[in-house]
Length: 316
Ligand code: NAP
Image: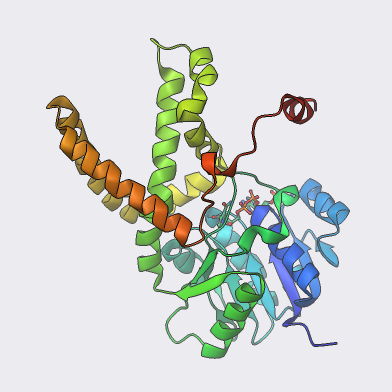
């Protein structure tokens, strides 16, 4: 039998991302031992019931003792507290990484508290769903998705290579970049789209001239797809906007300018401007499908609505 990639992996936080990593480590034999720690006893109990690890800890420092890989899978806003708690217990040579959706703020939050004898390689899997908690994880989450690593200056190339290998073993492709570039890219591909979804769903909920029941009844005409994004975890997204403020504001300024020119095109009946933009955006959608980042199936691959399935999911 071949040696696992890591002897002991500590997963700190066991929500969607932590549990998906745990399942991958277990199913693909990538860790000799999986130590799980989380904040609330009920989450730890659930992780135990699901058999996600080998040992379960309410104390983060206990989980990292002797670990050669430590992965923070907590909201970005919790990274400082967790790093301070584990710092004295980290083993020499351990690789410390995270999965946070913002990188500049995570580096600022963690690096000052880490001992010099560990290798810090921040990371971000560009994979997720709107579900949270230990039950949300699944094996295929990272498959055919990108994972961005943002190694700090003077990072040990061997540590970066080992972490790259881990993500590749879990099905991802890996790219490295600086934390600030990561934050700018993610602002436009993820953070601003989420803000738009939160905003439009909020606006619809506040309308007085269209009733809420009408919004819900006719949602399949476009609104529904925004509601999926706007159902994402409030803690995680609050932290993202608080910690990636500069890049989000920069991209929002561009977005507002472009929205104004669309407004102008509608006001002046400039059909050519609208048609040109909609043609360009359709081509972007096609490129995403061609890059294997989404399905080409009609209706985003949704199964036809089955009344019995609806009853099953709402019967709880
Ligand atoms: P999640 O399902 O909500 O799980 C969060 C985990 O963090 C839980 O184990 C929770 O523990 C713990 N936690 C929450 N607040 C904490 C605090 N203040 N101190 C210590 N632990 C705390 O979240 P997730 O979706 O896995 O996200 C985790 C990280 O992955 C975030 O940094 C997020 O930015 C990043 N990420 C998320 C996605 C996505 O689509 N969801 C994609 C890529 C990256 P308890 O239940 O015990 O409180």
